[in-house]
Length: 197
Image (cartoon, rainbow, N blue to C red; front, side, top):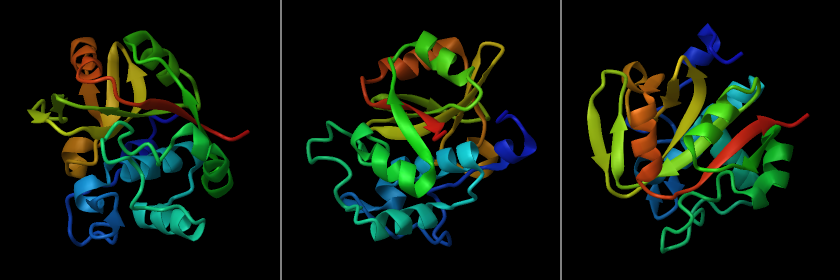
């Protein structure tokens, strides 16, 4: 369902100052430095619902609903960007965006099973591990990062990573070995996101 021209083209970056969300205050800084969770959430919403919301739209809707954009994770970082899709926010996310999160295991099998469902994507975080882009370039992110896994095909897990340009971050292939390394980077949060029925 999601591997369509529309799905392929859904992408937001946190790199460009001209984007309206770039300087919005978020967590301990701004969206440029800490907004990967919310930007990934915006992509999840658009993929699952066709809502056509950008990160600024999502930010403003959450703000109007009374969510504290500067308090989406605790100071120790033990719930990195947990405020974006944590289970306790399901009521708000159902009402605002028509989606909800579900807990899932942090295994290759669980990720593959979720991505093979017709209406599911994965919002997931890791830390101290390699990230890759569409060109196969690898880089090390020591402080944690949230990305969106949106499809699985022929043994490859595909991600959208907002820390790149659209050309290099929109449909990143992770082999099983890459995915295992990513999952083993740190036991951070991951959630299956689905549209509300």
